[in-house]
Length: 113
Image 1 (spheres, rainbow, N blue to C red):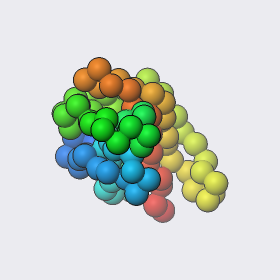
Image 2: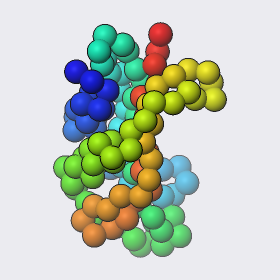
Image 3: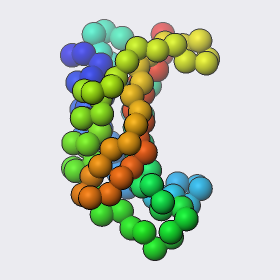
Image 4: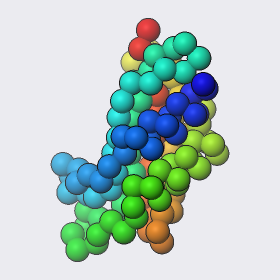
């Protein structure tokens, strides 16, 4: 299994709604994944744009809709990268749409060994 597929599977099983400590609302999921024999710490998040300022703004997307939107982000823009820590892995980020709302999203997998 490649990293894209492992990340997509992790999102489908681990993604849930979350209210972040900043007051923003959205989705978050994390887990350890294995791709092509390599272990990674993976995480995905999507923050509803404007949800911090407009406390009445509610998340309309379902976890399934957000999983599909994040899978699209992975397919479109996942790239290999070296993180500030010196570790290597993969990352995709950008704005995505789910259920008529826009989210700032990121997905990453950091190699563990």
